[in-house]
Image (cartoon, rainbow, N blue to C red; front, side, top):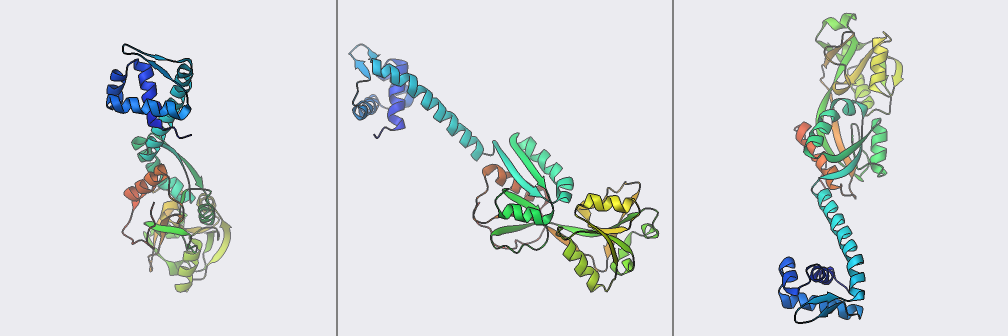
Length: 307
């Protein structure tokens, strides 16, 4: 059976208006084209839907049945198409993403507020996880895209730099180092260090920089979350090297944040997604919003596939 939506809409318009002339005006067709569409529908069904006279058009019993069912189907189809159009225009949708905790705390609030104001019917679900987990979840398709740092070895992932995030030293304000604005990596020698664990994308950069500076430190404790690291520093367990996005607020009354120099080292915050999957329109809008709000001057690490 080959019944088109055009034929069904033509019939429903005639049934609603009780006239081919008025129905033709409603649907924007000539009267002859409208009549042809109705005849095609009747021929395909093998049933008479309308009784026509020179003065009026009346529904047959079968036609009345088709009006009741067909009107509901067309209304549901129209509603579905409107919903899809809204999704395509980023008017609605749910975006599931993952990011490292420091980004969730420092960058995402502004992004969420921006997206909420621009697309109030787009909702976000943010999984704040360690960098290794973010990369794994993006690779498995558990989230649409992620924000992390570190080495991305998978060729299945498209990676785009977002911004640079310099490393800094965090210590208590009563620590002798807190009197300085800048601290050289070499000055950390023999200090007790509270470190981010290997699940963090920052760990390898920190270890490489310490080694190149010839600085021996005592790694006293390792923790996965930056907030836990800062808690240990606050308790006087040791000092910590963290990315600036994970550092305490400048007005923190207990902890001081100092600039690490010679060398100045940054990690790169990365947007990542699967190469073989297109972002939904809503996710693409959030991705672009992040670039609009935070993108630095770094070049793309590899060519972008179509989104």
